[in-house]
Amino acid sequence: MTFAIAARCPDSGKFGVAISTRPLAVGSRCPFLRPNLGAVVTMAFTDPRLGPFGLRLLGLGYSAPRVLDEIAASDPNIEYRQIAVIDRDGNAVARTGKRNRDWSGHFCADGMVAMGNALVSERTASAMAESFRKTKGDELEARLMTALEAGRDAGGQHGGQHSAALVVYRLQEYPLVDLRVDEHDEPIGELRRIFDLYRPQIEYYETRPWQPEVIGSEDDWATRQKAMSRP
Amino acid sequence: MTFSIIARCPRTGRLGLGIATFSIASGGRCEGILAGVGICKTQAFINRGNDLLALELLQQGHSPTHVMQMLEANDPEHAYRQIAILDREGNAAAHTGSGTRPWSGHKIGEGFVAFGNVLAGPQVVEAIASGFLEKPEDPLEYRLLGALEGARNSGGQVGGSGHLTERSAAIRVDADPDYPDIDVRVDLHDDAIVQLRRILDEFKLYEDFYRSRGRDPSTAITQGEFVAQLQAKRSTLSSRAQARDL
Image 1 (cartoon, rainbow over the protein chains, first blue to last red):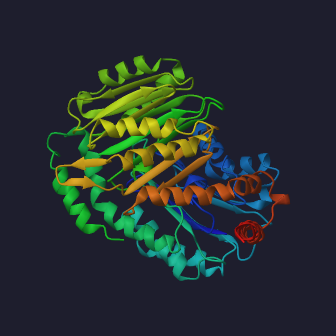
Image 2: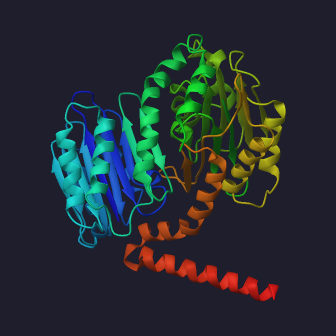
Image 3: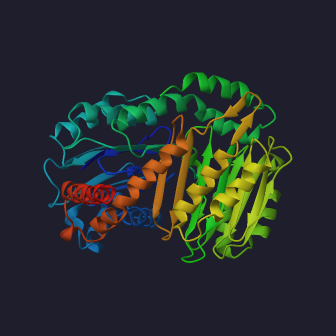
C-alpha cells in the first residue's frame, strides 16, 4: 500500500526517493541511499533489512539487476515484496512480487523507477513516471516532490496515505534533503509545505559550518522563519 | 538552537537519541547513530562530517574522549560546535565550544549526555537529565521523550528575538545496525514535541504489527483487520472504564 519514485540525476550525481503510504513513518523503513553508489527501496510487506543488504551488494560492485536477483534469491518471502534498485550507472530495476495487491507494478526508465502496490490504478505509478519525464532539467528533489504529487492526484492508493518522505543525496555522505511527514491526514501536501520552506535553506546549511562568523545573523533568519511558517 | 539527549538503555544496550529545535527537520541531521557501536551528535554550527567520522573511529575501538580529540584535530572551527559522543558501553564525552551561542552547555550522566545551545539557561540541561531519569522503568524511547518535554517545560530555547518554540523534533532508538526500532520525526509544526508524543504513541500501537508483517508476511493480517482489532480493544477499554465510573 505504497507508491514511490526513485531516481538518479546523471548531471549532478544525486540519488533520491520520494514515497508515500498508509502506515506511519515510511521514511524510517523504506528508502535506503548511499551517495555515489545507489538507491534501494523496499516496500509492500516491508522488510527494512533488504535496504542495507542491497546497498552492501552495490558497494561490492554488483550492478542493479544482479543486486535485485541476489535479494530475490536470498529472501524466502520475495513474492510479498516490492523492491527497486538503482546503481551508479543509472541502471534502474524493480521487482513486484506476485502476492502484491491490485493494482501493483512498476515502470522503469533510464535512471528512474516509479512503482506502487495496492494502488487505485496503474495511473498512480504511470503519472509519477510521466511527471518525472516532463520535469527534466529541474533539481532532482523538486522533480521527485512533483512526481509524488502527480501520483497522489492520479488516485494514490486504497485507503489514502498517512506518511510521506523525500530524501536526496548529493556527493556528501549525509543527505542533502531529508524530509519526512510521519503521520498526517494529507502527508504529501504537508511534505510540499515543508519542502518549499526548506529549499532556500539547503545552501545555508551547506555553507554554515565553514563560515560560522559570517552567518551570525541567525536571529534575523529566525525572525524571517517565524513569519513564513504558518501551518 | 537545539536541545538534545543521547543515551544507552542499561537493560537492553539499545542506543537512542532525542532532539528538538526551532530549525526545520532536525531529525534528518542525526545520521550518527549505529547500534553496537555508539552515537555522535554534532549541533550548534553543525559540522556534518563529524558524526559519521566519529562512528568510524568508535568502530575502530577509540574511546569517546579520544574520538573527541580527533574531531578537534580535524576541524579548524571546533570552537563553534557542540558535540556529544557515547559508545556502546555508555562511556561519554561532550564538548560545548566557546563559539556556540548562549546559553549553551552539557551534562554527562550515567549512560547519557544532555546538551543544548541557545537555551533559557542551565536549568534546561538539568531538566533534560531529570526528565530522562524520572521513569527508569520506561522503554528508552519514552525516557528520551520525557527528557525533551522536561527541557521544553523549563524554558527551552531563547535567542536574541526571545523564546523560540520547538518546530521540529525526533526520537530514534536502535537495536539493530541495519534499521531502527523507533524512528519518529516531526519536521515542521508549531508544537513539535506535543506532536512527537502523539506520533510515538500511535507508532507504538503498530510497532509489532509492522515488524511481524515484514518478517512473516505469509501469516500477516491486513492493515484493515489490524485497525479493526485496535478499535475493538479501545472500545472494550472505554466501556470497562465507563462501567467503573457508574
